[in-house]
Structure formats: C-alpha cells, structure tokens
Image (cartoon, rainbow, N blue to C red; front, side):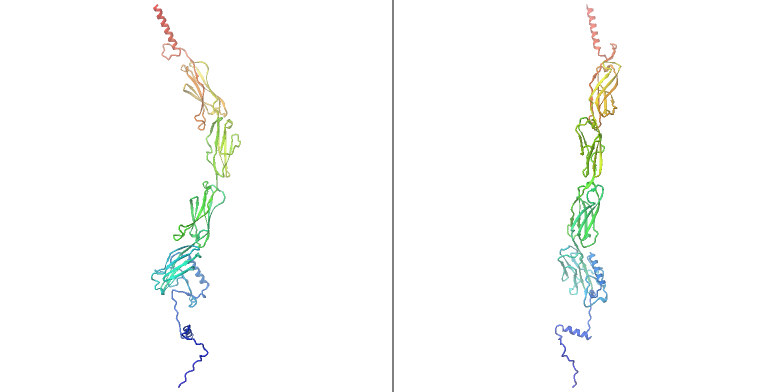
Length: 538
C-alpha cells in the first residue's frame, strides 16, 4: 500500500469557512493572489470615472470655467456643450468621481426625447423657496432599470420617482445656478437645463441734480438716479420724471448676477418753467412673464427744483407817452417776473429815487411832475428798465374872441379875428379854430415848446361883407394829447360876438337883396301915396 503524500500542517492556521460572512470574498482574493482567478471590469461609455486623487489643478480649473459658462447659458438644452477631456492615466476603477453635467465623448447630443422641466424657467427672489419637476423622458429612458435618471443641482434636494425628478429648495441662497435634469442609457445621454434668475429688489433709489443748489435758467444739468443693492442689474430700467412727464429711460449694461450698485444719469436743459417743479426717478426690475407682475418698481423721493431766472418785464419796456391833466392822480405800473423776487427802484424826473414798489402813485400832479420816469428791476444779478414819458397838461384857463377893428364894420374891409388863450400847457399841442356861425374859417397851431402854462394869441384875416351883418363869430381852443390823453380831447370855446356891418344903399328897384333899411323906405312910399290921394280928393 502506497503511502500518501505528506499534507501541510494546518494546525497553526486560522480556518475560515466558505459559507461564513466574507468567505466568498476571501476565496476570490486568495485565488486572485495565486493567479488562479482573473476579473474583467467594463465601464459604460456614458460614464467617465476619475480618480479624485489624480485630478490635477488644471483639470479643476477647467471644470470651474465650464461651470461659469453654464451659468451664463440661458438656453433650455445642454446640446453642444463643451466636453471635459480626462486623460487615460487619470481614470481609475477604485476611487471614482462622476463628472456631473458634462457630456462625455461619444454621447448623442441630438437626442429627440429630451427631459421636460416644469416650469421651463424660474424667477426666484433671493431667500425664497423654489421647486421644479422634471419628466426625464417619454420612451428613450425606459426600462428604468437600465437607465440613470437624476438632476444635477448644487442646492436643494432632488427626489426621483420613476422617470420623474422633483427638486425643491427651502431657501434660495445662491445667485448663479442652473439645474440639469438628465438620463443616461447605453446608447444615449440627454439633459435639459432649467434657467433660474435670482433677483433682489433695489434696497433704495435716490435722485439728485448736479450741480446742487439753485439752478440757472438756460443751464444744462445732470439728473442722476442711484440704485443700491439690486440684482440682476441687466434687467434694471430707470426712468426720469419731471412731475408726471417721463423724460426718458436708461438701461443697465451690467451682466453681474450678484447685487450691485448702479448709477444712471441724463442731461437736461433748465428753464424758468422748472421752478418749484418736482423731479424724481423710478427703478423697474423687469423679469419677464415668469417674474413678479406688475414688475417691481421702487421710486425715489421727489426733489423740488429751485430755478433762478429773470427779471422778465410783464409790461412794455417803452410804453406810449402819458398825458395827464394838472391836478389829476398819476399811476404808473412796472411789473416783472423773476426768481429771486425782483427789486424795484423808481427814478423821477428830478433824478431822485422813489419807492421800491411795482406801482408809482402821485395823488395830484403838477408841472414839475412832467418828464421821464425810469423803473429799474433787478434780480439774480440782472436788471431791466422801463421808461415812462409823462406830459402834464393844463386846460386853457379862458378863451376869448375879438375882432379888430372893433365896433361896426364896413362892407369890404379886412378884419382881424383874434383868439386869446390864457394859461395853457403844453402850448405845442394847442390848436385854435375860428368859426363864422357853424362854419369853420380855419385852424391855427401853436409853435411854442414851453411845457409850463403860457398865454397864446392866435389871429386870422377875414374880408367883411354885408352878409356878415348880425352873424356870430367865435373861436375854440383844443388841446390834443394823443391816444393816451383825454378822450375826446379837451376843448374850450370863447363867447360869441355878433358883427354889425355897414354898407352903402343901392337902387330901390334893384332886385338885389334888400338891406335891413328896406322896410322904412316902403313905409315912406306908402305915406306919400296916401297924402297925394287925400289932397286930390279935396
């Protein structure tokens, strides 16, 4: 009987039953150590695995750069995105890291059955909750046990239920994030982005005008609107207002997604009509149909503008001359508009300053009050003047008429008609008219330029005829002072003088017009005839 080979001594070794926990694993490791067992591991093409300990700084930098690009992409899909390249020596089958959100080489980015996210776009106020639901596919990701369905997001919690992924976040605390809903099968990988706009209303809006202080009419100023701590600035529009009238809009070009301070300005030409008008601005954050409706609007306080202007006259600078009768009241008005309130100073004909009011009044004018009155208006370093020319008039004290020579006049003689006007001013405005009955015989004007009262004599030659016998002659003095003077002009008439004219008698049979002695001749003829008849009868 052959002797059996010597078996190794196992008395000092630990026996580990194959059926005990970990026994199969121990057997597999033992066989692999002895080279009796080999294992082949296959990694799907759709998944990139990276040994996190081997990813150098440049790879990390490239991942960060791609994340920033994703945040600026507001598109709904992830097709055509950049692909992160990982070298072969960086791949590992031990400690692995899934490159989330990046399409790996060989993935079909033109898949038709894409994930659908509801809502397709989110607008969320910073600090508020948010949620979205993703249906990964209709058919392409089925059966589910052969697919990977998930949502990549840096904030909140995704909840997967079959092909539906629900995402919720209790408080939005990030300014830049773009959730990506995706599914992966052996043949295709599809993903859809959810654009999210995180906003913050303006903390405050303030309005100012530069330069500050009182403004000057005609100057150009800068209207400025400062908006503090607002996001995103690219959705911000500022409108400037004058009262309730819009002066124009300004939009921000800042693409920063985090809160910023923005300043807007607009040029404006100041006019006097802007004095005491309220200027202001409003900031409007327009976030589209998914944002607050109506859009968020924050208004600044009103700023009341003070504008210096003028003075501007409200009366003619060269008014028509003023004529006034001695003893009557004089009232001159000088009105101007300006800011600050205009100051008035009157200079009288005597070159003496007068009251600083808009109206100058003299209760009873005399001849020394005639002349030029100057009203000077000053405001804001500027001045304007109004000049009044005043003429004080004196109606004739008396007007008398006479004929030279005096007494009865002879037919055919040349008489002098004389009109004496006493104590009249100004004489240059005096006109005397001579009358025969109601018929004017002519006018005579004075050439005297004295402004104080004078006595004036006017005369007119006239040929006397017997027809002037018992006719009334007279004159009138008229003081014509223009449209600004008394209307109708002042007229003073003389007493009427009845003229007696002597002329030679003519033939009794003449058919000419009898004189005033014709009745007496007829009486004589009657008496003579009566006497002849009486004597004949005797």
